[in-house]
Structure formats: C-alpha cells, structure tokens
Image (cartoon, rainbow, N blue to C red; front, side):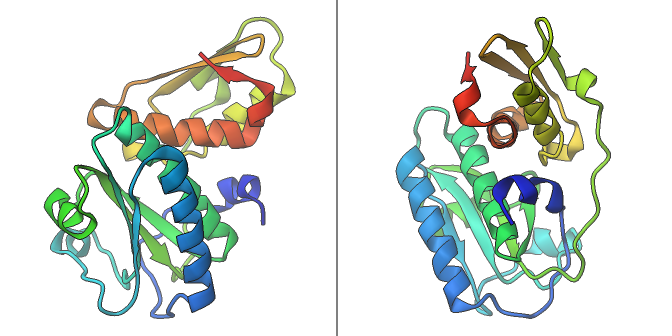
Length: 219
C-alpha cells in the first residue's frame, strides 16, 4: 500500500486488540519519525508496549487497547502546530501502509502528560497506533466544490489534491478549509479555531500527496 492509497483506507479507530506491534514495525516507525523530526524540527516520540500509561481522558472517550501512541510535541519553533499536523499525519498514513490503525486525539488530551513524557514546549495531541478491532468507517464529507475553487479549468493534479484533502482528519470533522488554485499556485485558508494550525498541516499533507508536490507551489 502506498501513502496515497492509505489516505482513503485510513479511518479513525478507537478500539484495539491486544496484539503487540512487532519489533521490526516499531523500528520502521521510529526511523520514519526520526526523518520527520529532523526535516521539520519537531520532536515526536513513540511510546509502545504494555507499560505505556492509558490516561483517564482516553478512557472516558471509549478508548480500548490503546497501548501504543505517538506524542505530538515540538520545541517552540515557528509554525510548530502546523508542522506537527503535517508530520503527525505522515506517521498515521505510514502506519496504515504497515497494517496499523490510528486515532488522532487533538482536543481531549492532557498537555501536561504529553509535556512530561516528551519534554516539549508545544503539544498538538496524541496519535494512538495499533491493530484495530475494526478498520473504522469513512467520515461524512463535503463536496469538492464546497472546499475548493480554481481559476479557469482545473487540472487533474488539483482535482486529485482536493480529493485527497477531503479525506483529511480535521478536528470535529468540520473540514473548515478552502483551497484556491491559479496556474501552478495553491493557497489554503483554514479556520477551525484552536485547531486551525494543526488542521492546516494535515490538509496540506493530504493535498500534496494527492496532487504531487512537483505540480504546484503553496502561496
């Protein structure tokens, strides 16, 4: 499975089996995390195994079997939360290509716990990882014309980018973004209150994966 294929295959999963993530898969995840951390200056950290704590808020949300997760943390750098959105969804989709499921928690998590475990100044949430009891279900989605416009006839790469963006797991599934294209330039507006920066990073990643990064530039 490719990252582009994983975009439509990945859905939120809250309940997980007790099957541990094999060491070779953990190694691959950590290698990918290291690459993203180095490339974008963030500081994500993977926690795995039976000794990983399951916090009270996760229990209240119906989490079951959540013994592996990615701490979405970063030093205090410019656009930290947007970068964490971008890098975090990369790991979620990469995990999907490895046969894992995921659940992004960005609202109801303990910033103090994430800060303590990751040692970071900025926290964007927790990405639960593991083998789901189910594969989840697709979220309700807007139409392409609801979230995008293109000046003139839209090229295939733009349409594919918008299609991929509509699969993005935005906060509360609001899909509060709009993509504007003109020539080889694309602009994104995103307005989802405290989740705006995280959502922008997630949607940008999805759009790039669908459109192909070589076909356009962000403006």
